[in-house]
Length: 306
Ligand code: HEM
Image 1: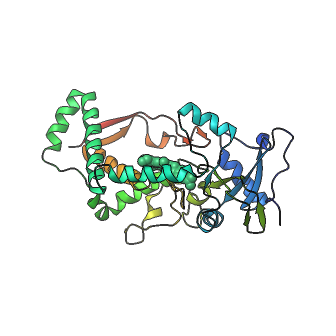
Image 2 (image 1 turned 135 degrees about the horizontal axis):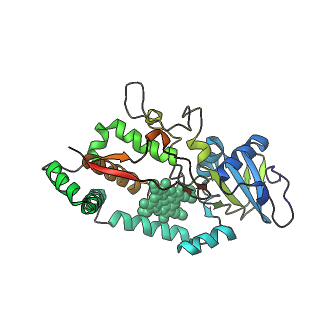
Image 3 (image 1 turned 60 degrees about the vertical axis):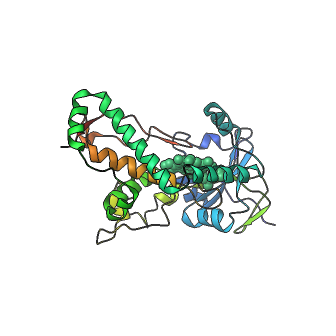
């Protein structure tokens, strides 16, 4: 019943590869969604890929059709990159075992959250130590400044809505994995009016959610206000999904935000960060946006806080 979602006409052998800007795949998806709607098909070579664009389609796929789309998709081009990086994704149903193992390992990492928190705190302190080593004079000043100050802890986050909003906004704006990791249909699946055959690769555009103008006005702007209400309280959003959602949601979604908050606050507790150039000249446009968003390198000074 039905057929694959619409999309641009593919060329023989290369499919739609020539119509995609691989340096900014997200932009290509945006313009294709404008032409073909939030659910469209692309051909990477001869392989059809269904792309889901926008909160409704992404949520419908990863939550409502979570089980059907829980398989991990693979494309020769991605496999080659992963191989280079030493990443191996398990195929078939093995991912469930691997996932359970990872989650248990994370949980056991010192028996519970409290201990992970302590470990991350140690890591943050270690980072500070590393920065200190970089400059003896800074080290002296820091030793003096840190004094008996305690380290930040997770409990602080509740009373620090602005910092929390900044950390969220960094992740939203960074949009680290713009098209999510590829999923695949585990079985023939009816999605809206379309028939998606078993094995079809599914891309879910996280950019289309993290940059949704309805929820994050002026989404291109870095603005912690995206996560604050009028009274300055932290405002949660279902559209905040840099770790994806559903059955294959990032295994580190509990750990990574903890790391980000503790490391970020520990650094800022100890240092003032100063760019070497005028802040308005800092370019935060990614140098490449493929599966991972790559930012240009920055130089900055770590000035010990007084
Ligand atoms: C800011 C940091 C991170 C971001 C933005 C991020 C994002 C993601 C995303 C988007 C996925 C794909 C989810 C999907 O397919 O629907 C993923 C998968 C995964 N992430 Fe993360 N991640 C981060 C950090 C981490 C950390 C710290 C760990 C390890 C503790 C981790 C472990 C994994 C694993 C094992 C998977 C594969 C899960 C599966 O296939 O079932 N990630 N991550």
